[in-house]
Length: 386
Image 1 (cartoon, rainbow, N blue to C red):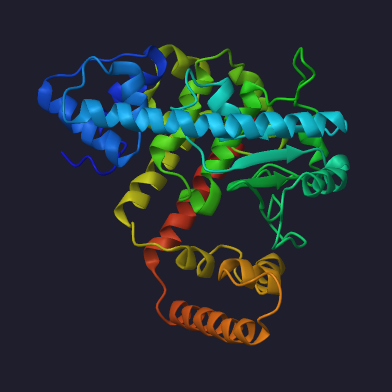
Image 2: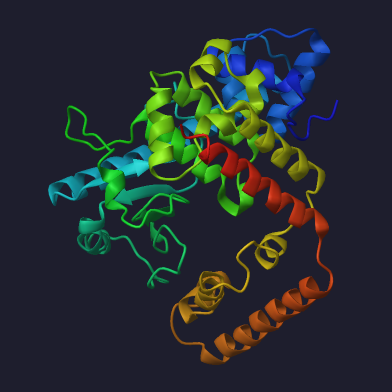
């Protein structure tokens, strides 16, 4: 069995993976099955999950390795937690409306141990009316943004801030939500008893699905999508409200995507999801084709995107040539070094021109098929609105 990747048909991986998330335990057909699952977990960097849930079943050499990875992840999460508490203190003091999202939220609020949900940076969602003040507060409290610039079209966050080797990405909206007014999102972000804003389970599931849609559904590995969706879905979720929210924002309901890996979820949750079966099958085909053409690059996607040469597409490409964007991309100093910057511009533009010409002459039919599948799946999902 190929354990290097998880395919839709690979129930020997999906079923025990889902049981670990939803039940905290699982059983295996035999020792070989357990060994195969351990090898897959290593490839997926899920050693902390296995140590937390079934350490008593795991034998050497995996047992000690998984324990080590769990402790490393736990120590890292403690460093992040300290920084999150500091950020919360300085922002709340100035009455900034904010909430942590993705790993910085889920690791501490949805997962039984933050070591299971590792993350590498802090994603911070700011209320649009408080963004300017919040960015200044960050700078005043030691957060540095050497490559700070106005956002590029299509982006959802500002360039990163840095402090004590930790990366912070301030967001003014959520990725791939495509809302004209991000303030609408805040109508669906409740405050808890401590006055902290936090995404609801429904909005968190919608965020998982929209994050998965990044780079034409190529941004996240499948196990990352399911890990987050599973631990959120363990809590109380109003699946009908989630579906209606997605329809209101002209987005595909997340359950149509999640059900593409039906064996991962308990049957009662699949029943509550009530996915659109035709849309789910279309999403399955997207990931089947994605697995069969792993050589697709981001350049391939950009050069054969559905909106190539549109105003938005051209704006995005030109924005990528801003001086601070080039400096950040090639790790040049934030200021000065103008000859090196010029040489880098020439290098970057030449490379992009070469890629453009190559794709105009040798177009890949698989990418066109892949893009059509995405359009079909999303349209079927959105258009199921009664």
